[in-house]
Amino acid sequence: MKRIYWLVLVVVTLGGVMTVSDSYAQASNRRRVIQMSGIVLGEDSTSGVPGVHIYVPKAGRGTTTNPVGFFSMPVLVGDSVVISAVGYVRQYKIIPNYPEEFMTIVIELSTDNTFLREVTIVPFPTEEVFKQAVLALNVPMDNGIDKRNLNAELMALMMRTTPMDGNLNYRYYMDQYNQSIQDRSQVRTNPFLNPFNWARFFRDLKQNKDKD
Image 1 (cartoon, helix red, strand yellow):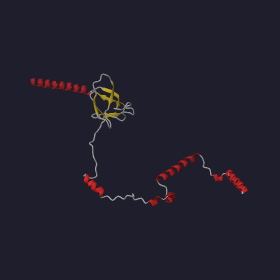
Image 2 (image 1 turned 90 degrees about the horizontal axis):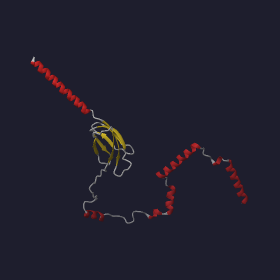
Image 3 (image 1 turned 60 degrees about the vertical axis):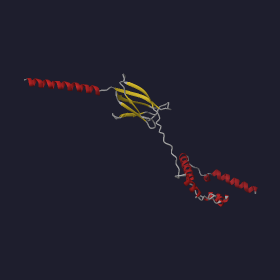
Image 4 (image 1 turned 45 degrees about the horizontal axis):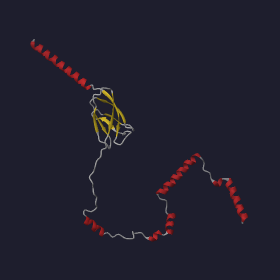
């Protein structure tokens, strides 16, 4: 009888301890939700830094700042929030047990400057090797230009007979395209089909014959 009594007592005691532990665990897991809002500024920025990532890595949630640097996201008390952006030093913030349900902060980022060592680029291992290479060069003094090719008449002939290059082809295409857009709204007239032009032509032709 005593064995049964002690067995029941042990079971009840363990059940009570487990219930208290579960209650404590549930109470600790139920952290308060806080709506965190704020603006992210740079060292030389007065309107905010856009595109800054603000997230909680362990929870897998986050947001980014809008074009003026503003953000708003729900967080839990004790969350570790990461603030990162390209060109700025990454920051970490722990959400405190804020008494209110809304929290507003201002985050100022510092520029991430990376200073590289000075590098001197030389094509030759030593100065003596460089001097020998310069002395061994056979550089023509006339720059390889035949002055006969600079004749004015020859240059003018080349300009008249050389086909259009890429720049001229592009300008010609754009002119044709703009003209086609104008032709959509109004019909292009042909001066040879205008009777007034023909009348003016015959009048001028007659006047020229009278002068002769």
